[in-house]
Length: 128
Ligand SMILES: [Cu+2]
Image (tube, rainbow, N blue to C red; front, side):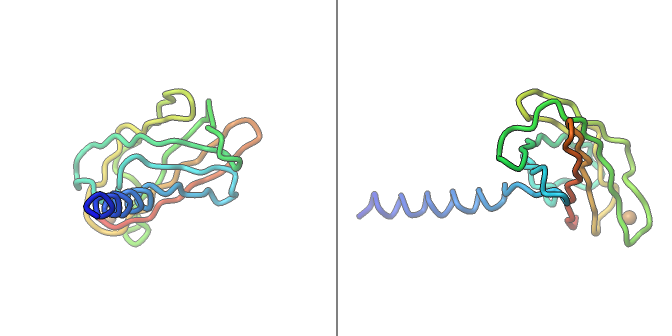
């Protein structure tokens, strides 16, 4: 019985972890982006790096994609305070560098992804 209880707890934790790391579909449904950290939990004013993976509509890693980062606070009428860049780590893995959110409130972040014939934009909205 003890082992079953532990297994049940493990399953619960596993499911909630999966929910937090749910890939987000692009507007065109061609690209799915999975951020490795919860950007709603980052520190305001701190430079952060955000590793992420890209997969295509078949669930395969989207390699050698060109990715640009944009965003801002629509309610405040301003964009991002910095100009983040994306580095390609290979095998569908990438990292956003130089990203910072300068204040608390509602933010939008967009990854614009181009790879061959694939063009898509993945949007994230969150509050800090
Ligand atoms: Cu603002």
